[in-house]
Amino acid sequence: MPTFETLPRFTADFQRLTPTQRWRFRRAVLDAFVPDLRTGLFRPGLRIKGVRCAPGLYELTWAPDGRATWSYGREVFAEARHIVWHRIAAHSILNRPLAEGHLAGHGRRLIG
Image (cartoon, rainbow, N blue to C red):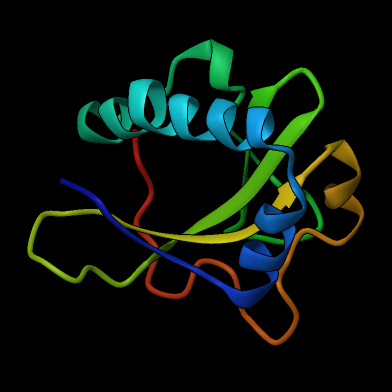
């Protein structure tokens, strides 16, 4: 089972989402993202891709205008991927995808 952490900026962004948006994000993570982490292949519907301006940072699409940025962190448990959530909101978060003061991809492992 993967582990995760949320950076303070992600937590603040998440609190500004509507209850419906929070539910949609959780469903995308539980129903698609986590199972795909286990297999190492992300389904096309999640539109996982690297963020050009931030090497090691990835974008996840969880709604038509819902994006979250994340990176791989150091494993907490052996063989369990660790995800660091950076930002969440509308597509506009890609203008500032990193949580300030945090380097993306620290200790990351590529999938695939």
